[in-house]
Image (cartoon, rainbow, N blue to C red; front, side, top):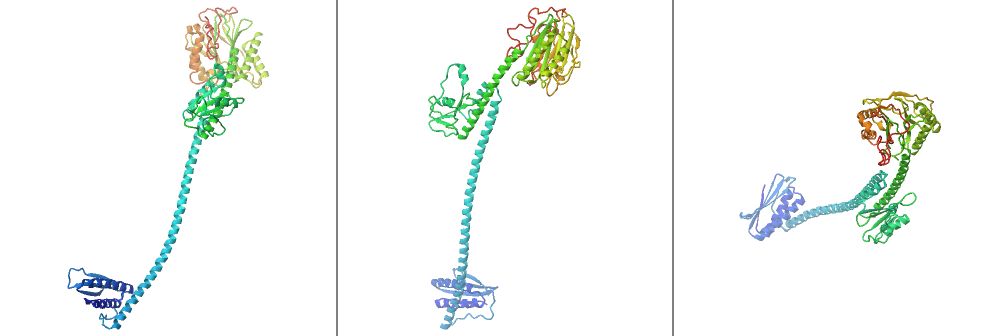
Length: 602
């Protein structure tokens, strides 16, 4: 059922509003919705009365809603006003929309409107309380969020600080690792050489340009050798006198363990770090550095001082080694033998020390005449290296010459040497080969004690290894009688005696080396051996030693019967046509023929 009203006056509008409220209440519109509907309708009616004319209000309940429509009458250009309100409960009975002019009825309608307003206010109070509760809750939440943000911010700052500290620690650790790596590499480079000049040359190469712009090494004994003194910075002189590092600059360096001094008059615009090169007794010199930038980092300075200390030790070791090497070479020169000669017999010897150590060892060779006119050629090897082995080798050589004065075959001489060495040095051993050439006899007599076998080349170029069973090493705790062996000799034959350093290689053993030696000896023509035995010895050594550095001494003794002489060692005691000598002490001291010595057979 549709309820309609014609409205043209304020009274009509009031009655229509009251009727609308009653109809809405009758159809079950909730108080809050009724109040909203009444207020909205009043506002719209006031606007319509202000415009004037007649207005038609229609209320139509349908499908659980109350449709309220206000239009002008008659219909014009004015857009209809339309609202709806929910009707949860349908009307219980007939709805009356008549409104009398009775004041009591109007008052009742006014009080009803106030009741709806009271309900609205109560709901408003509830909403305000709810809003206040939520506002407080939101405030507490905001406080918590603010506190959380503050904690997160503090945690973020702490994390950033931790990251910064970690990065700084990582940079510091990386810098420390870099310094330690450099120090280790530089120390290895300095100690790898036993030549003090090489160490001095390497120092600037290691330090420039990363840790120094310039490096000057002042060695005290080198300046004494030159004679003329060179102006030195005052800080360097003070470091030499006191043995303490000095830093000369316009401002203090603050370097640990370093004394600050005034700027140098020689280099006033550059800071100088002057560090002594220490040894066990006194500094060898002073290392003067200029920084790569404006100044040194304190940690870099500590590293440089440690490197200087190690460089001093390396220089001291090199000087000591060079001194001992000079002594060893002098001793070795004195121990090498001047080779004698027999008519028709040529001798050539070569001795090369190991490429490591003091260049002195126990390898030796000797050749001398016996009273009966025969010639003894011997080559031997004392176990070990160094001065002790060389001294023992000298004693063996002297003992052999002494025993040979009384005569005796090579086997008898070796047997006596065995007894001598066993009683003299029970913990030292030796190997040796002795060959005897008897005048007038075309026979070679030889004996060996634990030594690599001799190699004999015939005049036809064929080479044989004299591998008859040798005796045991000299000096072992065993009684032995060393046997003699004989071999026929023809003019043009060549006997090669050698030590194991010539033929033995760790990865191959000794047999391949003996085969190479045999091949090298067999490659010569007869006239080459007759004409230049010394040169032939050199040409034998060259291919034999080209494969690796020597970690053992090398000794080679060639004994050649001259094929140009129809002689069978019918020798007259003494030499003929000049001395036939082996290798002397040319070049570095060992292994070459001296310039003032004529070649063999000249």
